[in-house]
Length: 207
Image 1 (spheres, rainbow, N blue to C red):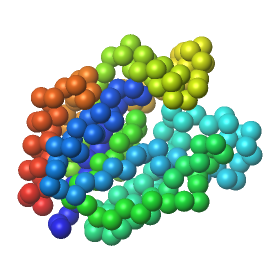
Image 2: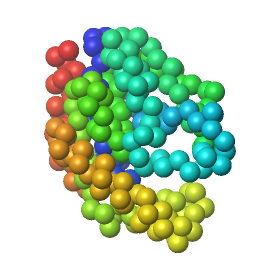
Image 3: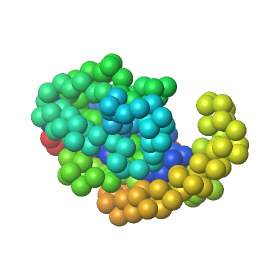
Image 4: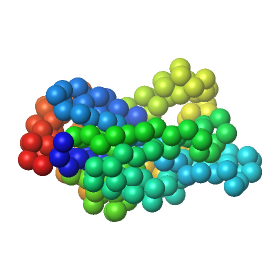
């Protein structure tokens, strides 16, 4: 296996990043592909009190350990296996468990801030931004949080208006300009995904 191709997939919460990622991975049948979620790299907060951990703004770039993520991507791109951290959401800090990732043909880094950090962008061979209208994103987030996380509609709306929306406008939306390709409407945009898959395949073959 040659050098690993790294794909960054960014976009707001509820934009359809996961659907795009799934479609691309499905279309890369025949290649070894692994997905690293940026959420694995939330910072360790074990030095903080539990009360202070509860105040963490997970929709801010400072919530992520980009230094470790950068080093891990460098290592796997150079053919070395990595131990990826995991996060304990019940205790709001890093877990003791790690996930071992062996080098692959393609590594996909997916997360709302995947394109926010300049050093991370430098490691990427392809940068994708999934661009979906705000009304669809909030509806998807509301459905997910109420159904899967037991949240109330009022709490989801309050969090969206007070944190998620302003963070998206300030930090996530501007990263669109760094993307090599912008995919509107997420996983339903088959044409854009097919074009992106063809590009990724050509990159892997030439490395």
